[in-house]
Length: 419
Image (cartoon, rainbow, N blue to C red; front, side, top):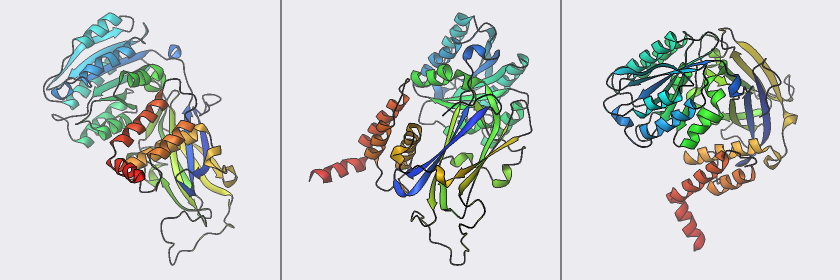
């Protein structure tokens, strides 16, 4: 998505509307938010605390074994004006490294190398210790952040999800944000990790390879560390004169009630420097034949005479500056004449996002995607791959191919085709 022209507002919103690749009777509306970027060299001084889970569940190569080299990637980006402390938790919590300047990389990396995993998990005690360390080294006007690295298996201490989230929400008021880095599989708790980061005015990344660690902690370091807008909320109102039905694809655990949009006391997600957010809506227009539900017997359908009849939807966005508790409102109409005639004529970003959305829906049973299967996802994604300097889109293609080979339904389908 294009960058904003300045820093006020701190991001730029783009919309694109085109027919849906898996259903020619519906439209796909893509909403993209792009934050202003800031080179790593221009970041404010950073006060970081690595909070590392060293419980027994972390004792595997894809957990503690990957965590150490992953965090070293971030350490190597630190400057003399930055500082980092390391705290750990298992059955109890403790400090491994006192706040240390970023140019003492050998000392910091040696502390990481000494870590080993064993014991049960007292996540609540560890988070308390990490926030205490962050407050002791607080930098006015700087980056103050706890980076929690864990598999999310909190089984001792503060284990109730809401209690743990309340703890993080209380601590964020001190000006210290929380980033969560998830490692491993099996007992991994994705929902907990993501919502903890949301509660802590931070962000979340799942690290399964060093390549993914490099993306989150090096290439996107500014987005990971520097929050440029907090409590960002998107609300879209569809024009009943134009739209019969609509559905948001994904975001099931990030929904807000309508009344919460204007309530500044309700927390929402944050955007980091250079961060990109995408939301996709599938829309059935009136008379387009794409609606899945029967019309109401006693409903009074709107007519094209409704005010703003050319508008398909109206987009509202609220956000707060990082140091403010009062939100600002931005608004945009989305016109019907913005619609592109064919999804093939849409941007590469739109088509690749549609491929990813189609793949996600396929993995969940494909209720709305019909015959749009792995082959169609691969074709759409390949044609829209475009510039891929870090290989992430190619990695997605590999992932789709792997899912296709593991799907038992695919082998049966291929066997039928051979008969």
